[in-house]
Image (tube, rainbow, N blue to C red; front, side, top):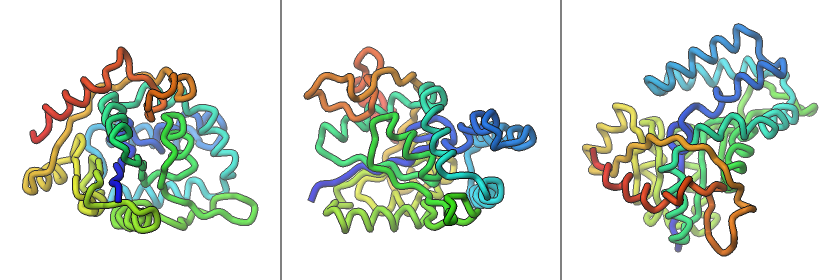
Amino acid sequence: MPGAAFFDLDKTIIAKSSTLAFTRPLFRAGFLTRTGLFKAGIAQAYYQMFGADHDQIERVREELGELTRGWSRDEVRRLVEETVEEIVSPLVYAEALAIIDEHVRAGRRVVVISSSPVEIVVPLCRHLGLTDVIGTRPSVDAQGKFTGGIDFYAYGPGKAEAIEELAAAEGISLEDSFAYSDSVTDLPMLEAVGHPVAVNPDRELRAVANERDWQVLEFEREVTVRNRLATIPKPVPIISGAAVASGLAAALTIWAVRRSRR
C-alpha cells in the first residue's frame, strides 16, 4: 500500500491562522463588528508570537461558534472564494510547497487536515492546487445557517481518527506515511504515521520531537503564489498550484532538511 503526506495548515503550510486571516474581509462584508475585528487582530498577533495551546483553541472554538451563529454558509463560502487570493498569496511557506512537490513526485497522496472550518479550508487549499482536504464541519440548520455547533471537530484525536478512517477506506499505509505540524495539540496525528515531522514547533512539540528523535524543520520564507496549476505545462507534476519563484523547489527541500533536528 502506498503512503501519504498529511499536512496541518496553520503555521505549517501558511504562516497565519487561516480562520483569523479572513477577519478583515468578513468585517468589510458586515459579518464582524469593529469590536470583533479588533479582538481578532489581537488573537492573530498572539497566535503569531506564541501559538495556541489546548485551552486557547477550545476557547476560540466556543467564541467562534457564538459569533458565527446565524451566518449563511453559502455567503461565507462565496466571500472566502472571492478574497482567497488577496489573503493567502503572501502567507504561503515556500519550504512547504517544495516538500509537497517532493511528495507528489514520489507518488504520495497529499492531504491537508485543519481544525479550521471546511468553508475556509477548502477554497484556500484549492487556490494552492490541493484538493484532498479534511476540516472542521460546523453544523447548519435547514436554511443553511450556522447553528453554533460542530458536526465534526478536526482537532487533536479527531485528526488522528480522520486519518485512520481515510487510510482504511483508501488503502493508505500509515507506516509509510508522513505528517507535518507545528503544534503539540497535533501529537495524535503525528503519532499515527511512520514519519512524523515537527514544523516550526511550539515548545512542547519541540521537546517531544527531540526526545523521540523526530525530524524538525524550520519554515521561514513566505512567498507570493503566482501561477495557477492550470497554467503549468504538462507533464510537470507540480501540485502546489504555484511555481515557486526561480524553480527553488528542490533547493528549498534540501535546505529545509539540512536545518532539521535542531
